[in-house]
Length: 147
Image (cartoon, rainbow, N blue to C red; front, side):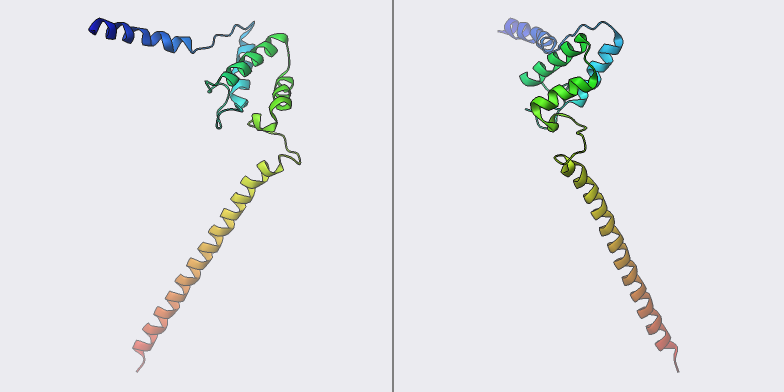
């Protein structure tokens, strides 16, 4: 029984190695492009994970396709365009600004502006309350000193 446990424990590192994808490139620049593109492309199946970080079969297929397109000599724009045409703008962490994606770009801006307006209002209200308390304290203090 103990030998079986030792054997199974010894196999664990091999399982980790099996999950690593190995890609061959002609140059270090191609490898850098691969890593940058796989970080830039989002896995359509996973919740907000890049295809570099995802273990999903779809992400693995996408990594394989990115590798193949880089080796074929495709440009970064062509590679991203290919995936956008298949999966939509969602697949890119940097979607283009157009009518369909305007909400993606406007919501954070509106939230930032709304937060700024809220902070300014709260600060003005707190300042007005502090001024009111100061004037009340001054008037009470002045009444106490009158003969």
